Image (cartoon, rainbow, N blue to C red; front, side, top):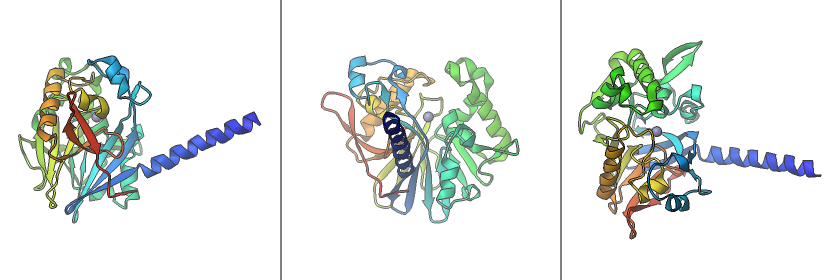
Length: 305
Ligand SMILES: [Zn+2]
């Protein structure tokens, strides 16, 4: 009997996990004539021990089970008429990234993607650009231009910068070389305030990496959307305590400053922020918190897939 109960419990957990995952695969936001698909590339969860600075007790109070910040690895598909573009590419199939599988589920062939905008060049955002076919590494999006901040690209394509990067990021230099090799003349380097497509503006948000950027969209319905990349990793903690950092911020002080100034700028404005690691549903607006820092309200999607 006991064994039966254990098996039933195990199957129950499996089924629940599967159902939850399927329902959470894609959240759809309608931004005027642009449809935003927020794609769950990989599930995640960040141990509290990785957060640097701040009051540990106050931090624990904001976290699930006091030890884990619920976060995810996500990418975004933006569809406007015939245009299909991606913001970030996820971890790649080799690393259990689901972006390509989910695109196919949505009826989209990777060849239809004409632009990929990268917020930065960390592995969880860039490795999805590379696929393995018969043991050979090939571009996942062979028709796409890859747009990336110029300073970001220059940093990761120069191995002399290895001493400036956090210790565990040597592989980012390898990814940058692979990007250069596989996408060659399809790399579009963005200068400050550039518009990689006419309806999206690059916003410089440095600190997490040298040329970390967000992308702003003013929708036809008048709402402002900001794809914020990793300016804020652990939503629950770093919104309330923006001085808290993560070990993989290239410049900790600049990351703090950028986070604080962006939160100050958008608080109370209704700007809808879609983060690179926000938990479901993945979009939020921000407000000043009466006791300091900022609070947030999730924005519910129009649909899920
Ligand atoms: Zn990231």
